[in-house]
Image (cartoon, rainbow, N blue to C red):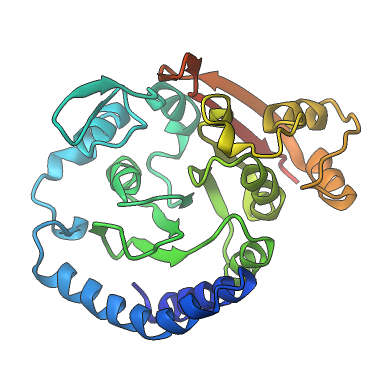
Length: 289
């Protein structure tokens, strides 16, 4: 992790503990975070569980399809996913949609941001699919990524905090992204409040992607206030230039989104949980301004 990214992550992670009034956790993390950074550096040097993609032995991966890569790195974006017990299950099957909208970017020098990158399996897939891309993986725990490269940045984000999201956007004030993927908490509030802040960081004609956009149907705890105005309903209102009320968007946000959304493409993947298809994925294209 870059030194400046470590400093940003350190400061904002501590700031979030203060926001949540977790003062004991704040004091503990002052020292623990420094230790974790050092341990992370050691693991990258010596642990077989951490892979430097710049030196990865299988160069044939640059020629593979995105679905092959998703399955190879065992991310749930692919057609199938291997559980910890070895069982292979049907997964979201987002590959056809990512190929459909992003094939034109394949050999371009793009910037891609994934929030909720976890161990970095999705970013590792995009590393080989987009051979000239610069990639950013943003996590609530930025030290859990097991894949690293000169082309990959790790950094902290907490999408439940508007102030942290704004700090994050300001941190990248000199860089916009061709693709931003929200695969973070899947909490209804978090999805909605993250959208206008980071959509501003999407380049003209670029895409903002929201995975598992209605997963709260299977997991009600992701919509604890039983909000009726869901992300999909909000997107419908925005594209049709209709007014609506949401506690997570103010009028300025709504006006910006109505003025800057070019197209919204809703696709349906394959995973079912608790009797619901939880694999709706949305590709939101920004206008060419």
